[in-house]
Image 1 (cartoon, rainbow, N blue to C red):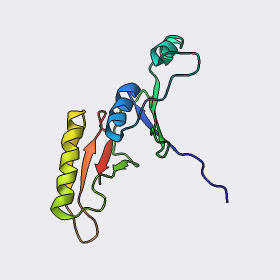
Image 2: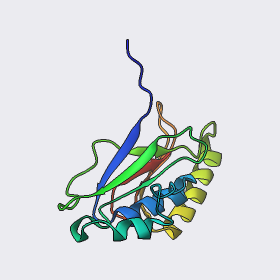
Image 3: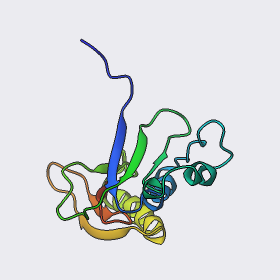
Length: 144
């Protein structure tokens, strides 16, 4: 069987750089260096046709462990719930009130970055609590 070497997660969005920088702040990711021969991403963008400027942006795990995130501009807006979403694992190993406190603390940090709190899903017989949120363009994700 062939093995997967790398995974990239792609987001369709209206403002790629804005959404990418939000996720950099959420995950501790970094913007990769510009292409060879360019001192900055602005220098690179200036060489592209006007219609393509700002049409894509990326961020990467500085440790190289996590997947690269790629953000591409699309003309249509978000209209329905995501079929796939990210879970930001901030409460791993925690239960009960301690877990909810960790989720709430991270929620407060992310709201300051532009995220929106949607709802807290409290623990039941099968699942621990998680907190549903939206990024700066309304894409759902969970604090887990």
